[in-house]
Length: 329
Image 1: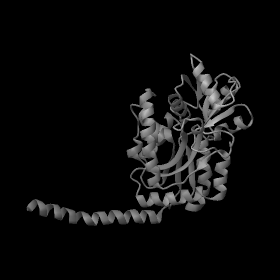
Image 2: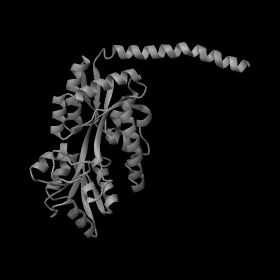
Image 3: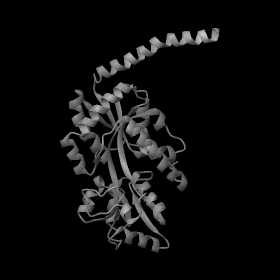
Image 4: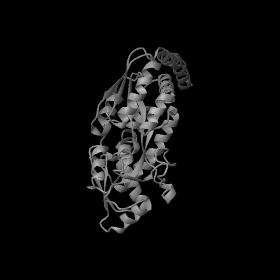
């Protein structure tokens, strides 16, 4: 009996604390933001993720009424920036551009990781997708994805392929194609998409997966040939290029997916307030058009929708990484 009374009293005493915590969170959201917001990008300036953050950050500054300061912190396959964000005060004033590498691939690629994406970082919204495209250089005398697959299967030694780096969405998209199509291919990693594309265009490496933002100049200039898109639908910028599903490989869907996350303990009302303004900026017609022209598919969903997508992506890609025995440490 005494134990029951003790638990009841403890519960009653906790109620004011819960009420205070809730009121404090609501007040934090009401006051948010009252100072500049720091937006960490885990890549060097000039790339697709940097362009996405700066394009949205410009409009977000006006909506928040506070400066949004972009800070580039490359290194560690995005782990340096992710760790710094995870350790930052959970108040909504530090946000991170996070892609598949940060949130999905890294836990499977590294035995030891300086952050836990599921426990240390909270989703705000998926900003945009960079769908992957299979491209070949002039050394490959093929005109379609089916011809490419036949050529790859016909070579006993297989084919080399380039990527923007080990563990990148470009790398794992091609590994997915290898598994689904039963190909023998050897990975040749580069430090970024541009040098990889340059070698594909120059004939040193036959093929690669690339996103439109990085590859549009090479594709439109005829330096490389786009054969198929790893997207559910054809891309409006490449209407004549079929999807992998159209050639019988419906599971070959891959994209670099870049979202915004914050430290895990950030109050939900603050996350919701930030989500509202980021999504409104993405949906601004001028911003949206700028992203589409760059080769990005704008999204802007809820924190719950983003979290659900990440759960599904982790199940799919981490299984592939483990099945293939891909490790980076």
